[in-house]
Image 1 (tube, rainbow, N blue to C red):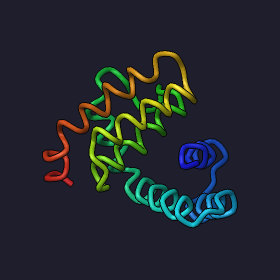
Image 2: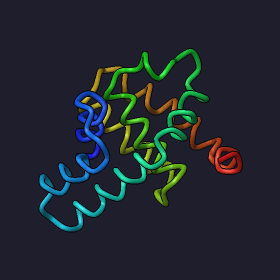
Image 3: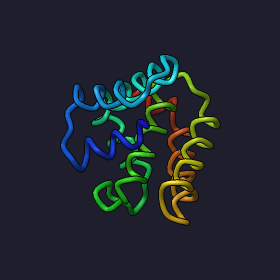
Length: 129
């Protein structure tokens, strides 16, 4: 759900309040809704920092050249790794599975490579925030 909403944020120009309203409307179960809203907020609130982090580790890849779906999967994964309390291995595995399901054949490897670098540099990244 968070990936779909971030996609709408980027392509349809939804603002944060509209994005949160979409999640609230679409997810009825409180646990799912609360988790999705927390992840969405974590990602949106740190978007500039997250984009800088991804841009710093994505060798030869400018964020604007990445597929919209891949870019937003990376944003969610980086948010969980750097700003959340999800173990990096869990965040990476979830991101890979989402990439395989919603993006291209090569996206899983691409997402894995970028998020693995983010995870390895997390301490350094946090020190520089």
